[in-house]
Length: 292
Ligand SMILES: Nc1ncnc2c1ncn2[C@@H]1O[C@H](COP(=O)(O)OP(=O)(O)OP(=O)(O)O)[C@@H](O)[C@H]1O
Image 1 (tube, rainbow, N blue to C red):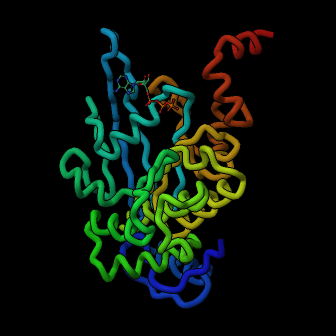
Image 2 (cartoon, rainbow, N blue to C red; image 1 turned 180 degrees about the vertical axis):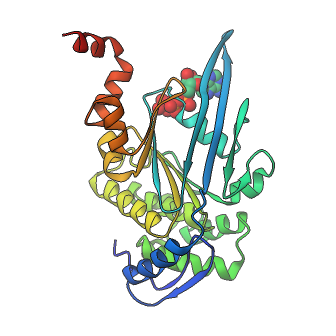
């Protein structure tokens, strides 16, 4: 992947920057305008709560969760199985209605205008599929159209992103014939085709080989540099430590730790996320350790 851009890139304030040099030059320009741009949080989660009733039992999947993500920031929403990560993402996407609290995407409250909020979100998941009978180009332009991107802008954005993600050679292939890694790069482009200010990545490295994982790392670096607000859910804690600027550690719907890795270390007395997780899941082992 070369990550060299020629074309147009939109910065977080939606101004358009024409670039002809390396992506680094584009990034420098964007970083400069991004630093002077409005630094409001792009994603705000306020006291979000969701309960489910399953077999006559109430499960509080998410309990009073609050956090925010600013432009150019990568937030790791982490937690063991059943912690409430997917339910949180589904509430942000407007697919699940919260019992209490609300989410705001680029200043738009999801409950008040779900379509406008969704237009500001990009979503990439490990289980993303492709339309096998469409060519990659047809599928990406179809998604641009679904998001209301005009045809000229869509073609221009497709050209730029195809270069950034190195999929130019795949555009006229039928999507069903792509390898897992090729399909991954196409779905990464699809998540950005409408230039959303907020990106949600759900287990983006699941099932990928080392090259695929590196692609995700570069993609997230790209998102950070062009000022997207990014939420990453992953079980790969070593990767999260390297990728994320701040973290929220969920356990049974509750936010146990919230902040930078250093904040988490100070609060938990542990060096690594994996140890913090272990303490959350096996509190008795912590107690016995403390007692000795
Ligand atoms: N539709 C539903 N009906 C009943 N319970 C649900 C529903 N969706 C989620 N839950 C429950 O809510 C809790 C949180 O689930 P969620 O899928 O958000 O966790 P997660 O952190 O994404 O887990 P994983 O890492 O395993 O994907 C779990 O106890 C789950 O069983």
